[in-house]
Image (tube, rainbow, N blue to C red; front, side):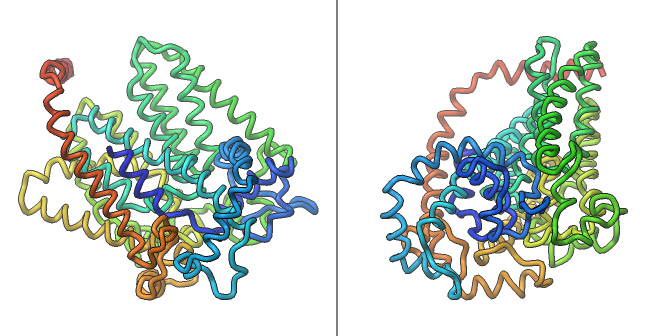
Length: 498
């Protein structure tokens, strides 16, 4: 039910139509399938995120998301080229609700634009929305392994999926949520390693770690932490040499990525950002735009009204006491260290970037890969506080604010908040929503305008909630008591051994 609710909510809002970041990846997908080349020369006009090598243009983004999109688009293109596209184009041309979302100075709707937009919708849903929903399910399972109460797990997971910037990027053709899902899946598999596991599981962990870097380069810092965690777990299991399976799988992914770089950019370790014609100063400052953490970035990504994560999602502040509560679980000390290290590494990476705000963005998007581990820590505080009246009220108020703020910023306008407006809330979000400029969504296709386009979504989610409520007594009644007792005995045995 959690996965279904998240898929419905994230899939309801379409990816932004004229987003240069998404277009850069989609250009590569279309060029490979339709033209048989990695060059995006024929499509470069719709993006500013490109690399120029010689006289040709390429996507400057990490290629992981685009690689996954290529076979999907290859199959989808059969439908996109069918005569069924014509009635859809005509319907959108005649829809006043859809036309109200277009720029007056734009070129309107045509078959090519609709084809491109439909490809973006499908690829974003499969490559980003689906992994994001499954990531939430993994967080739920990890919290169960950590002994967190079921109601706290539900609150934490739904709040993560719907009330953080992860919601805005869950159905967008970026790499942040995909890489976060890959990293957290690797964390989950590593935490469950035992003496019965064969090479297949270790190879899969290596593939997850390697592909996360190919999808988003900054996640390399988290991959290093998880690699050490895998080494520690295998050492404790008396199988340290089997880390070679993890290494081998990651190396295979790395070799494929280096072959791509060599073919496009002329060297195995050459990146597209080195050939970008725009933001040259940012890319060339420090090491690949990185220097030392600086105060502007630290404040900007935490408490500023421009991109502050805790202004948009204040419930994440509960991670501070949460890590303190978690520290008391001595048997989970390794997971505590890994989670804190993952959060700190991504935070310091973003705070060291010369372009920490991330351009047009909902919140500090570079922090997205750390949010699953931040949610783990939050759950310990929520678990301790829900039974106390006043702390429960404070927690509920923080979550309520996070819901309103996250959805307001995500829904405002047909583009993510621009970096030219420093007052995101008063300068962009409020004017957009007051003017009824709400991001295109399924409700728009149904003929609803402005905030009314969310009414069918509210009805649908309410229906899912009623189904969940109706099924809950049957689920509870079907759970045998013995596994719970066994788990308590196992927990007591571990504590005694410690």
